[in-house]
Image (cartoon, rainbow, N blue to C red; front, side):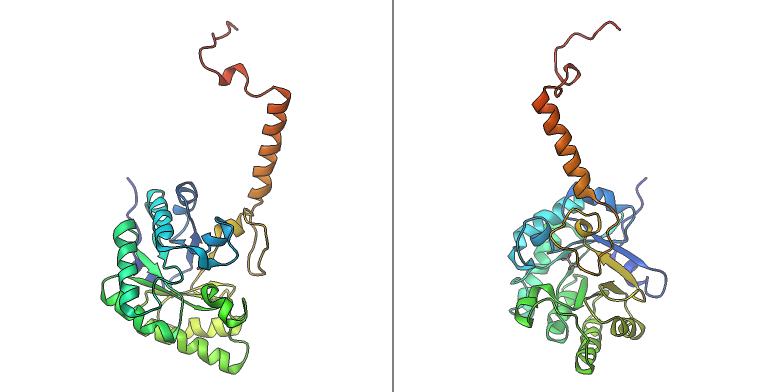
Length: 272
Ligand code: KIV
């Protein structure tokens, strides 16, 4: 029998009780591969870049996120599935965030939503949580806002920056987030936030001291090779594996060795 699915409250309870293992997935086959090994699977808006070939994470709509959320739900039965609220779907007002979050939950059946932002988004996080939707926070480097903050800049580099990260984490925790992703932040600052916080801090380009870690699966398995950020450890070269298969297939088609009769229908079986 399938194990029961982890909920946001189970992830919350993992603070100080071992590492929370998280990866992204955007489709059913990948979701099936990661589900048994991960506590949390994120349908991240990084799919804009690693699946749709866009230059930033800002090009995906709520409808696109919902379609991928449904695909990932079909491929998972154990992990807590979180779907990103994309750029432009929650920033106008807390009500805007609540509307989008409820749509994602109702149309995908996922366990929680994630949104980017610190102090300035605390009221929206509170409104979404009060509406009954669990929220995963996201502080530090915020890809959706990178354009307006001078690019993908590591956060917490000076005292003012570090203080802002501490304030952001405290505000999002107080607003009711069950856990918080901390991205692209100076290691000592991420370590200190993790020590101060009462909810799991999930690091990406942050610190081994975080309560859990997340990577974009495409980066981790070598499927997205346009660039590899410093914080990614590549565990496989799936891109090369696929290309090698394509090269072999193309050669077989060109020299006539594929398809063989065994791949065809209505061919009498040979006697030997
Ligand atoms: O969209 C995403 O994949 C993310 C992770 C980088 C945390 O937000």
